[in-house]
Length: 544
Image (cartoon, rainbow, N blue to C red; front, side):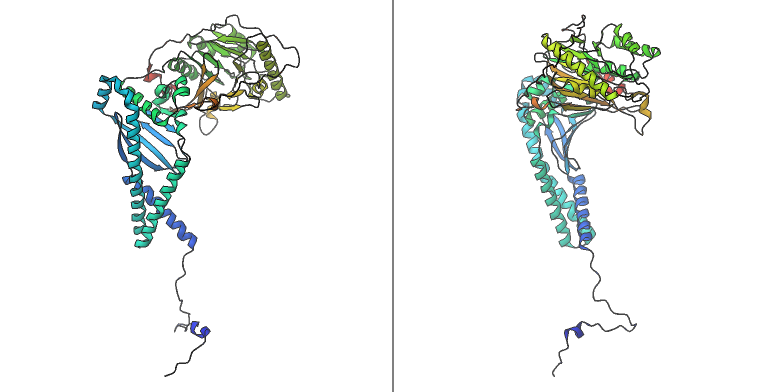
């Protein structure tokens, strides 16, 4: 029998159903982008669940039992949790995974062995390096198994097809490998130089050493983890108090505060910081008051009991009445019109704010007056350098005035902005702007969240009088009790960096003014004692 071959068009034509509606050939396929998005969600969620369930690795690091974990993260980094003391955060890498290291407990036998045989501490660095290497390798292998298992299991539950489930597991492994490669490419072993402390650790920055040892010794990541382990061992050995910040005879500590704005809690915080950090000098860059009235003068009386020389310049909320009251107080050094004072081996020169605007108004010619004040301060700095007594630190309230000293002094301090900032200006002078040590005073309740209480500890080399490092201290504002301390180093002080030259002075176009020096200056002033720091002295406990 011969079959007639029909045209292709006829073959593709569908027979109508009895109801008169055409019969669909196949169900519409889903959009490929939607399928890819769904698979991505399955892979990410499955990998995350796998890490949560089986991604932990228990590692003995020196005398401590720790748990190492990989966690999904937007910013990456490393977080070391030292319960109950707090945590340290390190910007160690940039990748979608974060390394969490939890210090679970101190092994009594190994800790006692270190106490009985202190000579073993010399070999602790190598031991810790080996423990961390083995733990990291174990964590990498376990994490691979965890993400593949999690993504495959979730893919099988969602798609009910082995091939799709295996594809999800393969993509999860690829994602982890890419994250690991990104972390390796962006790995920053020097991140331990600038840790961020939180909890009770914020009152014990000696956990990673003083400013001098940071500059000269923090060059190998494994060695500093060993140092961390050693000091944490000592911390756990002390149950009722935290160790005080160990004094370094070659370091001068300056506490920079600003914009207190009549917050009475600030004095307790400042006194606590002076005690804990063994502060040599306190610098206040203005706006201590809110309206500058004589009725507010009694607020300043606690300054005499802070335990360190107090250097002050006038802010735009401080009046000449305020300034005269402080000039009559013992241990207070008021700087204005470029006057200078030498304390603890450092020479400070400053100028008061040319404006008085307690109502927060903007007077005509405000910017010009600030620039003029900056020029007067720069002129005074040149005069001091010509007299053989160059200033190490300049102080002004407004950053716009402070910028006028660029090239005349290594460091200039300011405030006014109510937030911290740091920059190196064109001619080499470093400008440090402090936040509000009073949490903006009564303004703290104006916004949705209270403003934090901010201050800084500046570390200077006693011989060169150059800034070596600084700690930014941030406490929770009104009603909060959080505390965070982050350490920073100038780029020229990082290991292997070439020291930058000092600011090159600019010639004076006219005969400079001759600032008067403070006759009460004492280069060796260091009134702070050396008591141990108790838990009640933690900044987190003294926050309002």
